[in-house]
Image 1 (cartoon, rainbow, N blue to C red):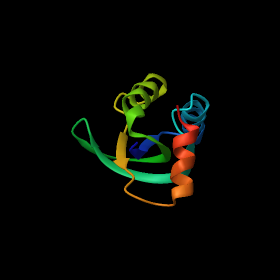
Image 2: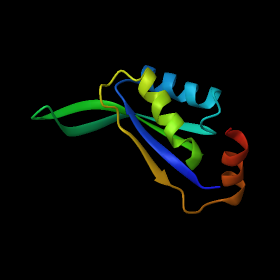
Image 3: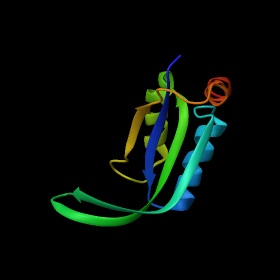
Length: 104
């Protein structure tokens, strides 16, 4: 069973916490890390923009990517939220087993 990390950005700590609690309570993620005060520089609607954002990192199963993506999009305030899945290619067997056991 393949595992992955879902990288998500949010506009505020409050919204990041809502997303994180939602994913963990629905057992879509075993664990979520929130990193506050990240600065983003990006193209949006023809201009270069800068914004303070919050990073949400969810540890989960690859099979849950689509469900997580749709779930986050339904509660996210952005029109085009950053939601990306990155494969986990190794790590502590104990922790990887924890991710498997704590997600649906």
